Length: 184
Image (cartoon, rainbow, N blue to C red; front, side, top):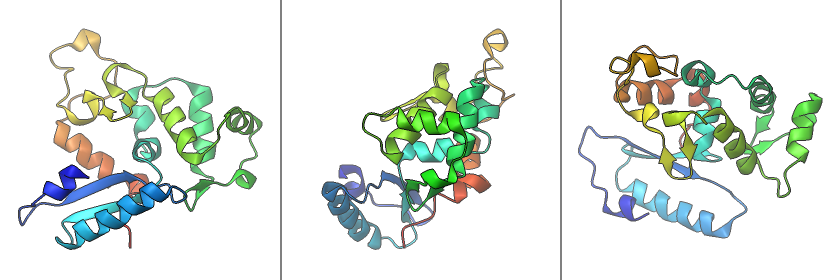
């Protein structure tokens, strides 16, 4: 909130605010109202994204498995089923027929769509600098690729990309675009 309050964008700048929107949390709703007022000062430059949580962007990214080289086949399969069942900020359990996915979802003591997405995203980004934990976004998501300097340590599936191009690809990905829609 403090960063947005202090934000004065240049004319060509566009800022996307990835804000965890949990509509049944009144504190979140109050912050959302304030963020809307702040974004109205700079129409088209400060864009609030209507999404469940930040991890939802990574979770939905079509190249997630390809980029991270993650081989957790069971988790990849669960992700596929959950991706097909999310509607209106919720996992629609009626749309999940895979028994392993249903068992995984029932294993949560305090179930919420946000917790499920965060948990699976953590499992799929558990390698080195691809990790996503709380407010930490691993360096492989936003820094220039290091594989040219350390070819023997290459654990991802990228040859070489700049940090900016990775972020742009992540945010412009067709599947990601479905969830990074601005709040109307």
